[in-house]
Amino acid sequence: MNGDWEIKLIDFGLAMTRKVVTETAAAGNLDKSLAGESLGGTFLYSAPEQLGLAAGKIGPWSDIYAFGKTLSQAIFSTTQPSRKNYRALGDHAFADLLSDCLEQKTDERPQNFGEVIEALEGMKSAEETRTKIILPNTPKPGEERQFAGISFVWIPAGCFKMGSPDSEEERGDDEGPVHEVCLDGFWMGKYAVTRGQFAVFVKTTGYKTEAETSGGLYFWDEKKWKLDPKKNWLQPGFDQDDRHPVVGVTWNDAMAYCQWLSKQAKASYRLSTEAEWEYACRAGTTTPFYFGKTISADTEANYDGNYPYGNGPEGKYRQSTTPVGSFPANAFGLHDMHGNVWEWVEDWYDEKFYASPDASKKNPICNNSASGIRVLRGGSWTYTAGYARSADRVWRTPGFRLSDGGFRLARLAQD
Image 1 (cartoon, rainbow, N blue to C red):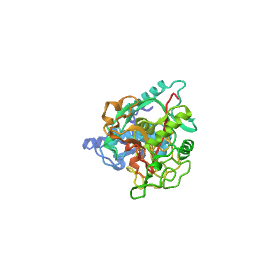
Image 2 (tube, rainbow, N blue to C red):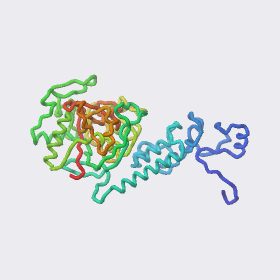
Image 3 (tube, rainbow, N blue to C red):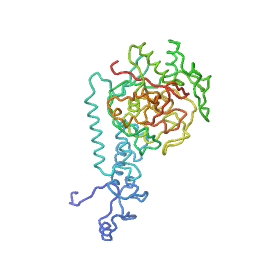
Image 4 (cartoon, rainbow, N blue to C red):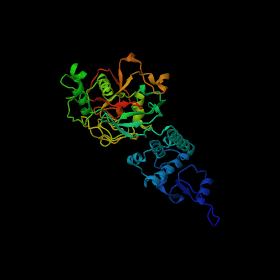
């Protein structure tokens, strides 16, 4: 109401003149789109179904779209936010909510403001919980430190939803059911173990990898995997330098490195558990990738860009590893969790483990060795984008070695 006692209605999206409302109501057509002189408003903020540009009924979700546009303009100075804008927010949960508000399809947006408020309150509660558990000497999330000449980042204690929903494209049955997992804080390697770091271990101990003692490694020749007796971590079939991740190592080789480093540094170095790996990879996100709903082979990860994910673009296929840290880190400061090399984790593989009570215990690990196979995570330079998803699980025998298989270190918090 203004100074002349005139009532003004403030609304998201489009508005109609009083005369048009009266005439339209009399005709019983209030549920239909109106065009021409009957409409007024700022069209950049209007939902596509209001403008007749997309199918779907007009409802509270239409105001959710306009709300998202308003927030985007206020935060980014544009109503068309880019993936770079979302990443710059830092808060992945809020970025996901804003992205959902701007979905073109009405059923993919929050259906009312009650859902938006519930999501925002959940973020506030999570932040308050994180604040309460941080002690004076506890490292900050993503804090980087050097141990034994290797860069680690602090992964804070917390809980997350592990696995993928039934609606996620290319998901495997072993990625469900989605279940809550809570973990203590730990240190994780900022990068996968490099060829240069592994070379120090070999030079110091005289260690021979299983590829060197048991007939080579499996190499992708662009048609199929072949066991090549001449290939190993020193000669994987493509050029590398000391900055590249070591490849061609088995789970057993990775464990030998951890045991050596632990003895040398007088601290406990190990492989991460499968739950720790996914928690660290997601870094607060719930989307298939920590970059969002899809991923780019040109700017975000090293995988076979001929095979994109979802609506993502085709991109480069480099046919080899890239130096660690070549692509942007996630919110915890970890690089290359998507693509480049598969990373061994500590767990045995059990297809049904996620449905077991043990999967939801604090700091879970699958110790059921009945399958005789171990888990790898993260995708690689030879595989498609779908395999690089945060929830994807692959398994191999502990002595299996590939030209795209490596590992990443974890370190106990108290060491």
